[in-house]
Length: 144
Image 1: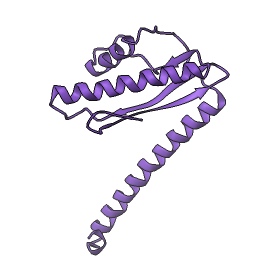
Image 2: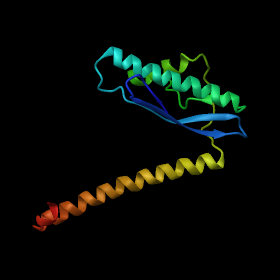
Image 3: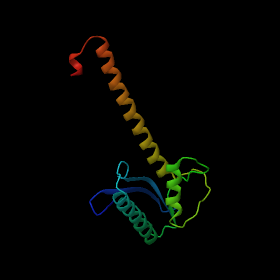
Image 4: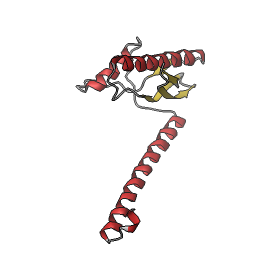
């Protein structure tokens, strides 16, 4: 995790596979949406770029050969995806066509995350449905 000059956090999460020599970025988060000041947005962008650069140096010292930003949006008209593509390209690497394959630990982790998200969504939907059913039965005390 990195922070910009004002303390705004920027973070990335990676999965490292030593056998393939690859570090794959799974998540990247920075607080720039909704910020109107270009100076503030630029400061957050610098912290994000610095974090990626330091991660690349760290993984190289570990002996890994590939820093994988994840998917590249091919032939897209979506401006935000194009911006992500430009950011990735600005580091000077290249695109590598590959199957979306993973080692077993990477697969198990991604499936666990997917399952946890699905369960959380269903729990939220179930809570709302139960509240709606109680309201429909006239049980307004349980809604307060």
